[in-house]
Image (cartoon, rainbow, N blue to C red):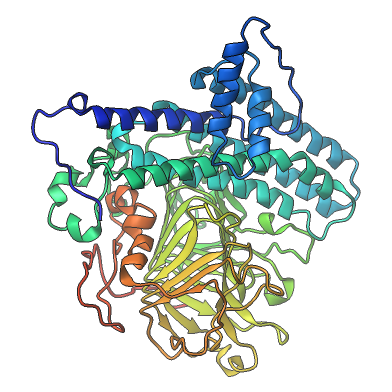
Length: 612
């Protein structure tokens, strides 16, 4: 448990030399992180390094500084070589190194873009060509998150260092995921383009991984020091009794004034900027026309009311379309539909009916579907990369790969999500709360798997968390439960992490619970948890005995709540969307004591009736 501040009125950090020393250590560490972030995309291009014949001492100091930075890195040699190559002035000043390194990083990203374009021109396989195009887009997103991380380092508030570090981990994880998705697109393609891209991106991936490792090392240091001045949060049980101490105008103190003004509005009270109506009663007849009016890089919400109707459109909220709000007339009344799929030659990443990239997106009372069907394999209905994205009272329908919760922080409340294989997947920090999860009828030779989390590195702060959800069968699937069983999840990537917390598991869940991806891949390194679930599928006596299947106590589960795992008090509460910040009362296990967080909004699920 974090301690409350022990400083009395008038006591300043200057009066506490040991705390000042720790402050200097941590600030210095953050600048070291900045240097690594800045060269995280500096791949294999060699750079000249000119020695100062009269600066031997200075060179030695620079080398020593670089070696210290690289100590916690996973790829130490790559770290040292890349940072040494980036520094041409033998400086030990982290800020100077940041500037030099970041210029090199941006130059290299453009070189990778050019390489992908050159390879694309030489390809005759349409799927390979599309994969190369996707790489250009994904690497652009990867660089965006590295730039965002660098900006956080250069402008962070020492009083909010915990929040800053958590942001850094999320953004660096996303940067890695975009790189991985680029390479994943070359599976089932012909030619050597995939091999060439993998080689070109090898050091990029290693340096981004190193940056994440160094940030995690800093996070561990803060935890070990346990200094009150760096304590920005308490356990939920403590917050109930001291909420006023940590809140300003109903929001946590660490939310800055600009964001406070942005978030201080209830979506139910928002007046739409534009209205979409197929019958011509609105400003536009299509969603595509409406999103063309969205102001780019806006710092205020832009609300689009989409009236009742079936909209057969492919929708993309681009990275510059920030704080966009879609409000429909109901999840079965306002429906955005599509049918793109892998079998017809489209990469999984591009099959989505709706793609949400811009940060701060809110969707309410919408239906989003991909109607390609089980025979068409991968067919995404909704792809979400938006950081701090919220979906409330939405219905997301498909078969294989329905919801691609790709990256960043996401929250789904009172939604319905349906599908067959891996129908909730990705590598985001995602909490799905009070939702109805519906398994549909698969092909005769298929087994159903609900989740496939894609965490590739154990230091990534990502997971799929299903809290207080109902896991049920579509009526058409019920006769096939025994012959075509349903599993809670499987490890898409080696460190896949998924938790079912206080959910109702129907009789569709196979007694094994979890399914291997292939052979023993990920079985010892995944992180799969079931806690305080109910229903006929919740009995864990016959679950698989992999090392990666964990049994956690209440105190460990608390870190995966909305308040602790995705810091939902910062960005969900101000929107008026209901949420449960902590755990519900534990029903199936006896505990001697333990805090239960207060509940914000309705407790009972209020999901709409499924269309399937």
